[in-house]
Amino acid sequence: MRNPVVLRIAAALVSGLVFGLGLSLSGMLDPSRVRGFLDVAGAWDPSLAFVLGGAVAVAALGNLVAQRMAKPVLDAQFHLPPRHPIDGRLLAGSAIFGIGWGIGGLCPGPALASLSLGLPATVWFVLAMAAGMIGHDRFAGPKT
Image (cartoon, rainbow, N blue to C red; front, side):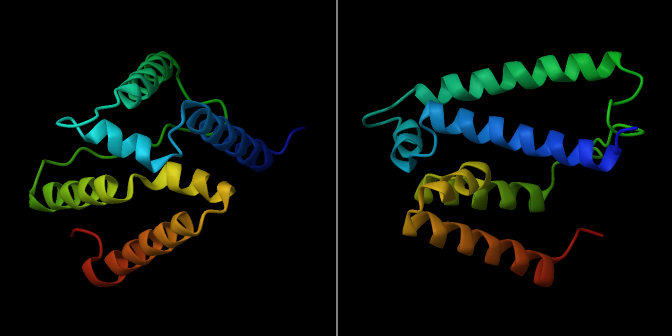
């Protein structure tokens, strides 16, 4: 019989590799491409919109399949995030994320995938991102 923990780890590894490969093939590991998408008043690069559109289409298809399934293949139940109202913390966090994305040209997934390129700026970005996450957990903590 197969070990379900090993299967979950293998599925996560394959998913991460496909995600990283997709980011690499689409050019989303290049921060200047992301900044070009955000520069709507200048030399706008719409390629990120197509990548985002493809991601939304795949996620929508996956969501439709998941809704028709009684339970996931490798777990006892689906783990969906709870619904929370839009509040000040969410808006502030979204603004900080967006500002960081605009300045750095990277968000967490592509930043981790970009580590494979060995660029010092990406290493510093990931270290700063990790420090921000740790600082949030230590000082702001979860909403109660």
